[in-house]
Length: 408
Image (cartoon, rainbow, N blue to C red; front, top):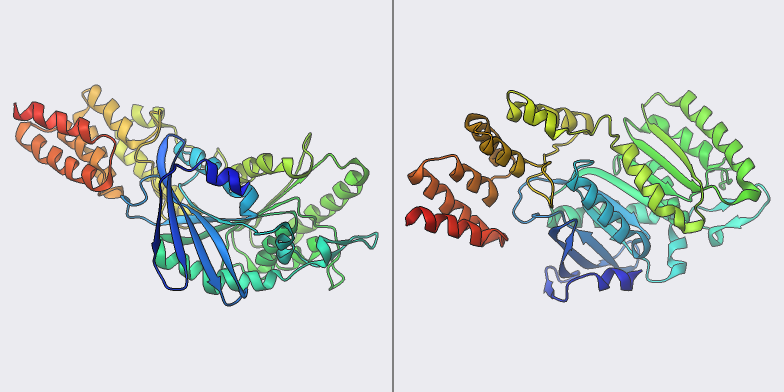
């Protein structure tokens, strides 16, 4: 998968040194119709005693924007990073979730994955995940090295999601057990909950015992349903887990245990990621109906209220989409619809709100030029051109042509 990840990049790769101990490389790709940057960081970790590669996917127009982003940490980065990056980029562009910075932690070898596994023994006495690893050490790496590094280099906020697959679900469960301040959302794929830990308790029982440490967190557990010989026992254990979880849950931790039909092994990843993201950002909550907003008397007020409500719900500032590929459902194209409908006052209010969210948007200054008379229009167009030149906007030629038409 690492080769597949590299293959989809454009051929231009720029390497720079940022710190003596860590090296960085940058690639530009097009995803969901938008140009975006994906970086590779080589991190020398004292805690792990090793050098680890980290993938970082930045949202479209990251360098132009000024706000912070939630973080999605994808373990098994060599297998799941590209899937998670593509899915979250597409969903954000369609207003299904906020734009996010996606971090991938690839494993240099398959055996390295077991370093993050819990020490688990089945009811039949079978030892899983090669006897387990040391997920606690990875928690220390995340807390003391990786997240400070990310905070120093990128505009990240503290709303974090962690995603693990099979053995690396051990790190997801370890995070849930003892690091409620590091993560808000926990996604385990093919990570069993009925195996016994060294404490004698099952994984599920241990998870339940840590509920009191959380407030408004989300735990998603996705598994394949095609292992027929253990499915009946697994589902019984899951029902018991869900019952006990709900009984002890005074912290409003949202839980979803998912058994996916017609998927085997790691084929469960795409369906689990889809269902997990939809569980974290349910459509009845994260539902931005731009048609209804456009039909309202004051679209700018409607947009502001919707995103203030979402921000309050999720605990950090969430922004509407500036512009995205081939859809009306964003601020830029809603402004166009208002201008074309001769709703100039409403358009102006929306542009002013948009510039509050995106002060470096050449597109919004272009819209401002469209709703102003000649002299002011030229001022705004020149501003639009300066910003487009600075941030390499694809609409630069169009902005220049508009200005030439006004000058002539």
